[in-house]
Length: 336
Image (tube, rainbow, N blue to C red; front, top):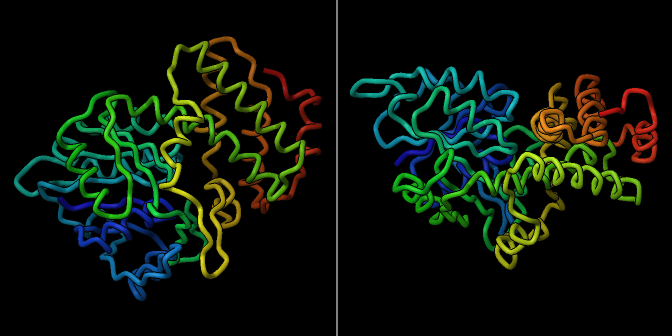
């Protein structure tokens, strides 16, 4: 089994680096300065045990990978980039005939719950992965993964439901590589649970390190709206306690030697000046479901709008305080 990691950022790079370290067959797919750094110097993966310099094979174009039976495509781009990636890779030929979309499994190692639906339009074999993997990617060629004794917990299952031999084979490779990888028949229940936790990402991205009462209140209100929306939609989700139990004594944030620490993926998008952010598929998912089921979601609407404004304006985290953000809830645009 060979793992093609499409999007070698914080999550994809951590997964690919650990798989390579454990002797698994891996190809990273990266772009621009990150691709050049990986090609010239290898992947610098910092963990609580130290820094690894890993000479992982890397390409910047699908055309540079000859696909074959036994390949697993691991999609680790942000959701706003999923359609372009899926369209490109689904059409790639596989040795012996057919295309990747017809013959190869794709694993959505991403936040949110939209990617699997997008993938199933293009791939016959789609797997969801609930990613519990704090990690940071700010500098080309370098990733920090601060958890131990396992680097992360990657809950895996067939989409829309089920647990099959392919999922178990993928999980076996991951579990040889410093990951917990339980295979479950209801992976989307886990991903919806993670979605509720990710509603805080926008607060961190917009308000930076503000952890005061206003920031905590915004986060709590966003999650309460999310829970109400999922209940109205009849969507099952794991609770915070279940996710905490998965991590306890296994995936714990530990000090890194160089003082790095993991912050949210949305925060990292603003710091890197990416120009886009995944909030439309996190808080925006709650807004969408709220509109479909007549549940007001003013806080998530506000966070969605503020995060998108920050990304488009290339603002760094902390440009708006939580108090100023909360005050906007009284404005004329904050209705449901």
